Length: 86
Length: 438
Image (cartoon, rainbow over all chains, first blue to last red; front, side, top):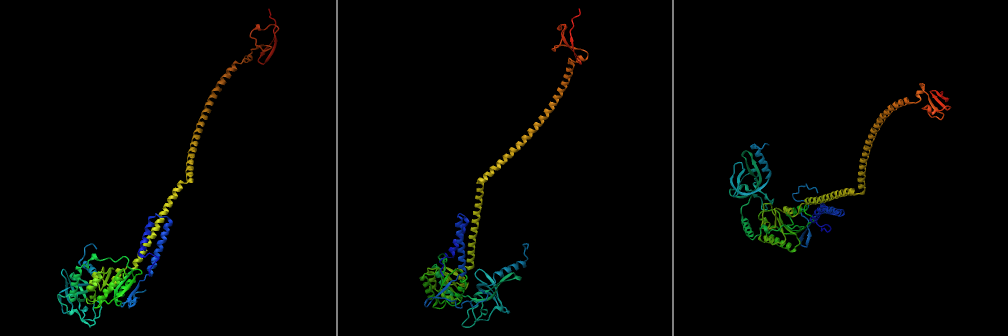
């Protein structure tokens, strides 16, 4: 799951900070500011989606090279107490 | 609370603090002052070079035989072992688990023991310490040598057993953390004779592949023997020479192995390793929220500033506008007109007043003069009336005139025969002058 369109979470946060301080300085004209603002909101939304859908890929080196890996005792640990609602 | 405690209050406070802070604790030390009263409870002190701790192991917590390791939960395959309770003796090195309890009547605190495990130096312990000293002298554990985990750590090579709790716990915690990471598991046995060379091989393979940002070396808890693979010199060397930073989480909190002492970062457990590796997703959400809010706040303040500037300019413009100037001029004109008008009114009023006064004076002066003249006129009239030449006529005088009206003042002016006119008061008499009677 490689993200192409967004610049990565940390870089996105950096960009959002940058946008915020550019806006705060107030040296840009209105159109530039609006464009930046839109960019910021879009970036935040994209990253929020990224966070919601985040999933790690887990693979294991087997006899035939990299194989997908399923956690054996799988979904529930042995001492599973059952309070996990999701 | 007035600042002065009663003894029972202070003790109660200490009790709640201490017992709250240490509801369950592991303590290692040497047993001394062991006593075995008839009750079956065991009383002793745990001590090291600098401190001592009173401990009690109540009979109810002692077990005659243990079917599994109370620390790791590992079932003893060779059958139940006799509990340490019967074997305890002074001088024995043990690890005790239990809670701290404050005994108010004596103002003392003690450890209420639940579990005891022997920690005496066996062969492995001695070997461990020897190797530890050697590796330490080579600088393996030097903090200055250790690399921080890289900022970018989405690609993780995990070297562990694909079975068992460690990988499971690790993946479970990872699933709530980080963002779209990639995990590649290098399956290895984590105990037994085969373990060290295969772990070394996996470490080298991961390094050679060069794919990973971080290598994670994990294993669940176990006895010193179980963890021994991670105390091998070869494994420590492979960790030491790994070009990729190594994060190790081996055994429990209390377990230290040479592999995790050598690793760039030591986690207490596999779970902890996952926590050190990636930040919690909730935290990421929060950071994102904060960044987004600051963008919104930036926009808000930008808009407010622009609006203020606009208002300012608008006001300036209004001040400079011709309409405004005209209004100002008109205002001034009106003002001056008012003044002029007021002056005019004042002046007119003053003039009118003056005129009125003058007219009055004139009238008064005229009246005076008139009456003066009237008086003089009357006097003159009287005088004149007295001088009227016809007035004596009424008293019997007569005037004699010639026919052509000339008044005769002397007899010489008339000759006999002249016709004359005698005027009396009530009329005239024509007469003829007679010759003188001689």
